[in-house]
Length: 157
Image (cartoon, rainbow, N blue to C red; front, side):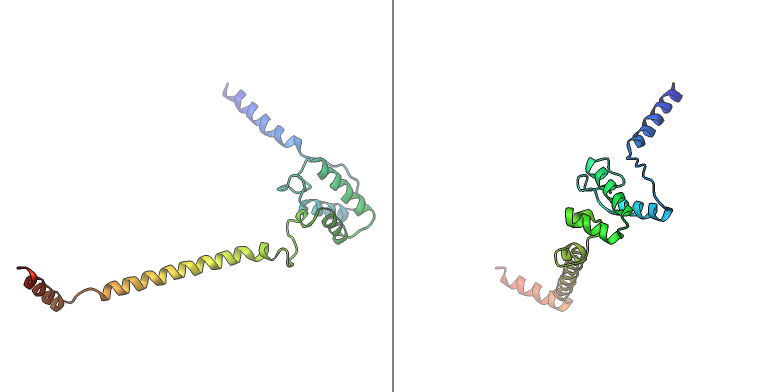
């Protein structure tokens, strides 16, 4: 019985991978196939947003794979293909957007937030050290305690 359940679970797990997109394009060379593979893996699907074009089953991803194959067949460079897709869909289709004025926050924002966090932590530590130092300086010496005790005893009628 356990073997049957294990076999069923294994079959179910293996059937999940059968839904992946399979393209049957013929390429002139292995170098062109590698260029195609690199392009579809580095570009993001406009519909799925967290999948590249290679892994997406969305109709737009299939169209984009077909378009990239066509453009490769025409002899266009990788930069021309990426520029065409960026012009059509925006910088969103790139996993690594270019560094310009619009994406400055995207590239340097995390480092800036980390620097601000370290600054706040440093301020907290400096204030804590000052408060420990001032509380240590506020402790009374034995002579001062004795004088304080005599003064308090004089006030009591």
